Length: 204
Image (cartoon, rainbow, N blue to C red):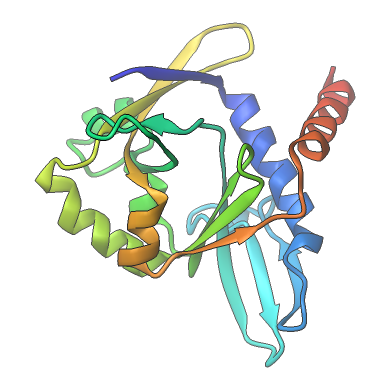
């Protein structure tokens, strides 16, 4: 089980940039307004980043995640398969200390209507109905079919904070079994990278 090492600040910044860029990305004839709420403390607990107002003025909630993982080699076929990281334990220290009642991953705890995973390398995003995904995880996680991956989170000065764990699941499985939808994005990698560099300069 190989660790992916990121800083807490980097993870937050990736998500913030994606949320800002998606404000215009998601607008179409059916979506009239996209409202970022990721900085509003009221929406922290339910893990909601965006409010989507559709053509009937119905509001739906979305959690945004940025996927920085490359394609993984399938052990059986040897081919590269794009997989999604579904976080089941967000903070292993909290999870252990609370005897598994706290520190659960947002893939299991989010109250958003949809999860939106933006894939930097694919220039695409996957939209997953949250309730269907959570039920699917509860049914399939105990089977041990899917690889578990860890991600270690560090501070800017290198201090270790905690580790997170999640299932690596092929996109095709979620499309077929969770009614997820893969959409091509107008946000290219260079746009994302430039925005990230600009934000880093502001905080330098």
